Image (cartoon, rainbow, N blue to C red; front, side, top):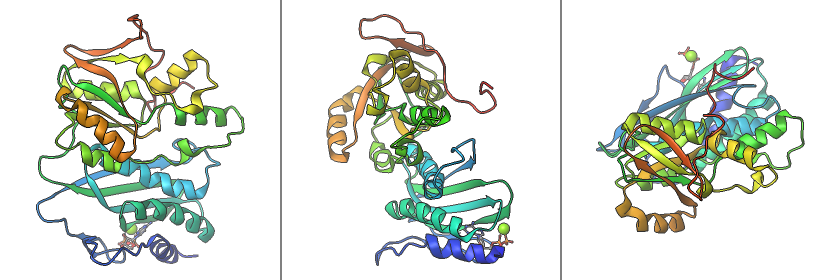
Length: 321
Ligand code: ADP
Ligand code: MG
């Protein structure tokens, strides 16, 4: 199979029929040297890109459908953290061989999520090499309304959507050769796109949790120039962590990556609104701490005792061998 046949297959298999009247803004899509896209009037472009390498960002035995799903999900999560509305994607695929069956399954996973968020694939690149998938997600936001990392202020509440730790727990089980009945928390993260959009005008800072709660909260604090108290006994506990001992549970909750939840700070006056938002979106939103003046993260247990976290998150090139 030739490269151009693969591209045609990708185009065909990822194509979504959107309802009449939906403005996807694609003036020119796949097939020319570049795509031509039209933003809705009065909006600015928001762009994010992320690469998934086999064996690093997903286990080698990951279902091909899930690879297609996840490569888009992690990018939509970045747009969600900005409060943006996703619209288009570019896909650069490095494949060790031109395998149409693989592409069929991959495209099915990609399309399932693209359709859910009304995203259109508008271009990309296809090369031969070790399996690697790069997606660029493009979306839009009204000028000045984007959520950033640098707006947190002392007194703001620290809020987490869903829970953290389950994806890392699944990954560890797989790596130690245990059978895992339900891998979805690792393979099918749900980008919190609607939540991100709803936070515009309310949240003072926002980030998606990809590297671990402490690491990503650290990024917000650094950008905002402040500190935080983290109430570790308020951290939501995913059912998948039920079998872990306390220390292991904390490690997953505080430092496990790949959850793609949103972590945001909220001025106190919006506290009542938070409950209504959680109910209307049907997403748990938990206040897990508070922004303080100063530097760093102070983990505190329910009895007021300080808790010293064992690890501060996943970083490439700093992984233990
Ligand atoms: P060029 O040599 O000009 O880069 P390509 O042959 O790489 O052209 O691509 C031809 C068209 O197919 C372009 O519109 C490109 O965006 C699109 N394309 C190539 N690979 C992919 C892919 N993996 N997914 C989506 N579109 C792709
Ligand atoms: Mg090319």
